Image 1 (tube, helix red, strand yellow):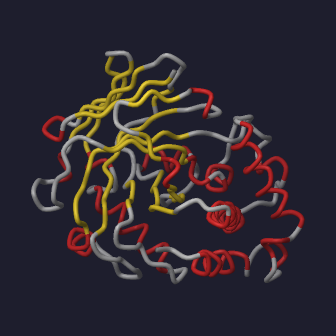
Image 2 (cartoon, rainbow, N blue to C red):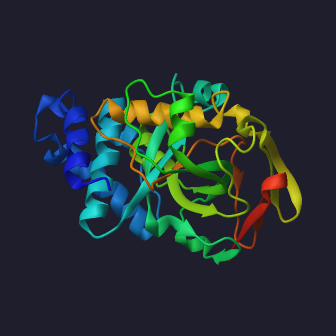
Length: 284
């Protein structure tokens, strides 16, 4: 499993060049206030002022340091890390966020939502949903140098997923806000038909996102960097630069291949993956 010490090494990597270059930067007043703000917003389900407004000098390294420290605190409080999510995998989303690569966040067991479950809308600040494929690893992956075939060899199975994304900060948010906010990760639904990574051509897995029986978004998994496994490869190489592997047994949300769909109280959300079946949830 990913240990607190490995998280700390990743945190220290980012901190070495940020928050006035102080090695104890995760405990500086600026960093601590940013982390406290995000934890409080998630706890109260009340959106906070954007960190990019409160701390206008924030940069990518700061944002990842903040996200990692929030994850470390959650693990220290007893939460179990089960994997990661990859976001901003399409060129259009990267352009809109003024970034030229994806981003990532941490996934915890407490985020898991059962297929078909009724979920209190009040559990989130501003929930939205996306269609994704989840890769469950049978072997660890550690970059650099991880490619498509490495991911396929390391994957035990791939399963349909809905990601619930949330925003613990008000609009308009910058990319630094989203990264700090754990890549907006908030919930995960998995189900349908799991498949081996070589059983089908994963590029052509299609998805329909329906809200209250109306189709809101459609897409195919090739929209994730040309192949959804490339989202996992990017993550393995990104974390590998911090000395952190992707662990066997962990789940990786490889990236959405539809735009987000807003979820209001009372909405029933269903994602149809064709031959891989469908999954759903209802916000109550």
